[in-house]
Amino acid sequence: MTRFQANLLLLLAGAMWGMGFVAQSTAMDAIGPFLFIGLRFGIACLSMLPFAIWETRRSTAALPQRDRRNFVIIGLLLFAGMASQQVGLLTTTVTNSGFLTGLYVVIVPFLAVLLFRQWPHGVVWPAALCALTGIWLLSGAGSVALRPGDWLTILCALFWALQVIMIGRSASHTGRPVTLSVTQFGVTAIVALAIAAMIEPITPAAIGKALPEILYAGIFSGGIAFTLQVIGQRYTTAPQAAIFLSTEAVFAAAFGAIFLGERLPPLGLAGCGLIFTAILAVEIIPAMRTRSDRTA
Image (cartoon, rainbow, N blue to C red):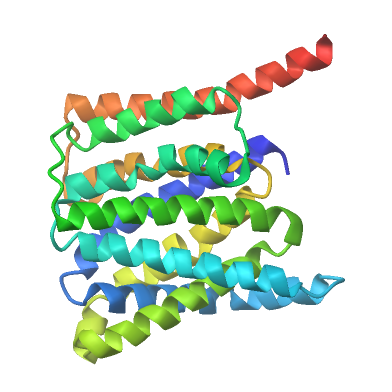
């Protein structure tokens, strides 16, 4: 798979996650955040499990214990990111949450350098800032008051950044992208359902009311989108992946306009333009330099 094809997969994952915001916003009217997370990723795990079994049977070597441990760690990071974001939404606005979650775009290259001395292409730094500015404009360019929910959402961005980096370091050499996805889904579902059973009301009627949203979030923005993320990150860098995945904010705005009647103000449209500018820069500039080096 080429880097261009991998980035297209990440773009598609961002689109599915963007639609997931619509499902999430309506599902929370019926059930609690941990129950939603648990059911969503339980369905995601079951929907992708047959493909993981097929992938395992095709593999010629057993998965090393170190990689199994890393897969579980990625699952815990996924749960931590989802949980802090969902609980944070109880005490912060959607605008603040959208902007602060987008901080992972900038956090990823910094953590890659601090933790692994992995220096990205120079264009990633201005592109990351460009994408972050775009998300800020898309959220309304308002002031961010740091309430408890805001701090939880900043913590969420840190967990997302760590998850993106860990996937980038695990997916490329194991050759088990679907197995990784199913593992992280299973870990997230088990932990979330255990917490939901202790602190949230669970009734069949409430689950039935939110079932369409749960199914979409589980199968598409859960199982398929996260698996596309893992596959795509085998062929691109973590900083570039973070920028492509950040397009979920653009798609969320678009689907919100289509399904919820929301409309983007001029600042929001400008934000979309900046995010896509960052995407084009990350895709085109390294490719141009590679071709220039080959012809030199």
